[in-house]
Image (cartoon, rainbow, N blue to C red; front, side):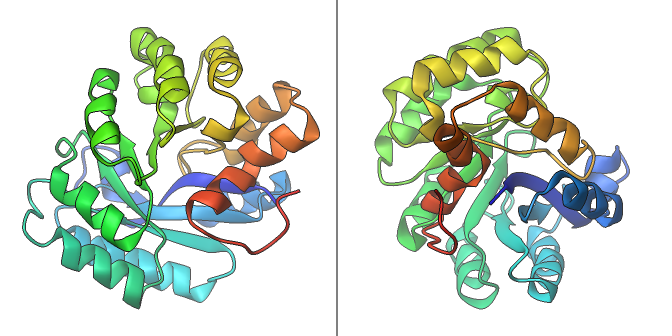
Length: 247
């Protein structure tokens, strides 16, 4: 089973770019079907009210619960004091399976990590190139899985994307996803250094083509079992989902 571990969905409420205005799934779903992608992790576009945005994503997930996996987007500063209640609502009422945080909003907080630990869900945190800080929160919360997308930087920060391989190898609860990575050899390096159990396939849809992003994984020419880990097995393990045979 192929699972895209990184896709936005629903309306934003800003117009700085597609990432904050709207994340429509029409073309994405057609492309994902053509690529053989069976399931997708969804979380909101950037929004000034993530409670509202998460409800919009929940409606999408609830229409096709066997197709979509929801993650709750939270803002470390603006949502301070209510993150646990937001995550509780998302997990218990919406059936969401993780938390999404972005450095563009604010740095991850202890409150977010504590909520992840309480509800036993992973955190997908875009560090925006701040790879050095990963060790601080990951060691403080060893039971929380942290997924660092884009090898640490969507901005193609070579230093950050080079450094992530050692972080993955050292810290058992830190993972990465492959979305938007341009330098193919850095994917190779991360896999060789940390192993296939630490890497998840993601597309950063709907703005990046899921079939193109998937082609990078195919081009790695991994052994079948290793490829299955990257393409879905690792994500299922992190969200405690036993549906389907990872092998």
